[in-house]
Length: 113
Image 1 (spheres, rainbow, N blue to C red):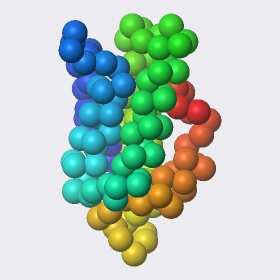
Image 2: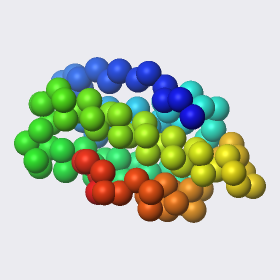
Image 3: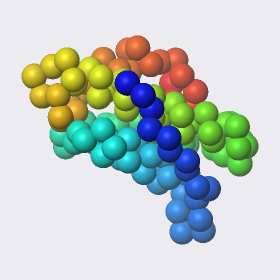
């Protein structure tokens, strides 16, 4: 599965790193023509936002390489969920089991886990 070429713009004064990374996750889902089931969307958003918070805690929220890596890893994680869903009974909808399967293959991975 080829990664979509996402380029995250730095958060503006009204946005946050958490919002920006979550937007990358949502754009990845949309680009692949799938949707989140509600519970999966909630836990994925929390996971992505926690990763952004960890990036900030590490003092790397302004480091272009670290932010770029976080964007890449956000796309990679969502694509792992999409790949897992593709082999299941609901290939166009992401569920909790897709989240768990992806996480088991993804972690440890900066800045999420």
